[in-house]
Image (cartoon, rainbow, N blue to C red; front, side, top):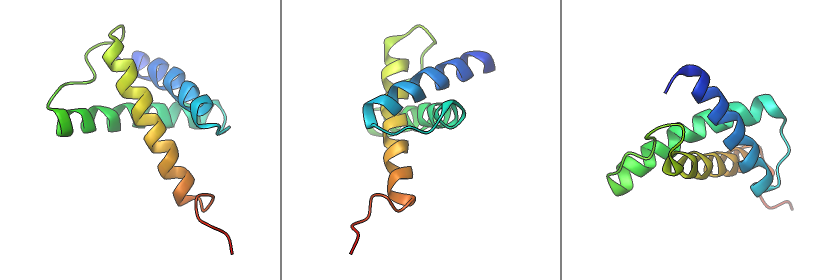
Length: 88
């Protein structure tokens, strides 16, 4: 995929993951999380299942992999930012 396709995919998947997780971070951070989440999802799909999850822009497995990776990344960010820890 071209760099423009990665940015568009990252923006859309980041915004979708943002809505699914209930986080509101803004378009730029959602795009970055979407791009990195797509790479994370692709890595996990390859490592766990031995499949290439990032096949092409119009492939449904690419979108599912990118959204799942973005949701995982939002969860990690939530834990690291301190909002995921119990308050005493």
